[in-house]
Length: 152
Image (tube, rainbow, N blue to C red; front, side, top):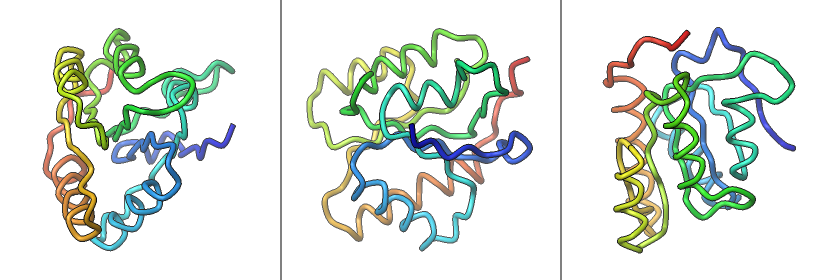
C-alpha cells in the first residue's frame, strides 16, 4: 500500500485525494500548488486505500480530512461504494465529499447525489480549465466552507 499519512493535528484542513490515474493526481496536486492551496494532501490510489485512511484496520488513529476528492472509476472498491461506506459511518458521514470524475454517465451523477455527495464535478479535459476547477474547489472547501464539528 502506498498511503501518505498526515498527523492528526494537521487533519483540520487536510485533503484526501482518491485518484488512481497518476497524471490526474499530478495535475490536481499541481493545480493546488499553482493556486497557493498548500494544505496537506493524503493520496489514496484505490478504494481500499481510501477506506484504510478513514477506517484503519491496524487500530491506529484515523485521519479525517476536511475534504475528500473522490474519483469514481478506481480499482478494488469503486468510488460510489467508498462514498456509501463514508456516509454509513457516524464518524465520517458529515465529511465533505466531492466527486471529481471523467464519467459522463448520468446514472453516476444521480447515484452520487443519492448517496449524499456534496458536489459532483466532471474533470475538464483542458489543462487551464482543470486548474481553474481545482482552484475553485480548494478555495471553497478548504478555506470558505464551514466544517461540522468532528464526530467523537
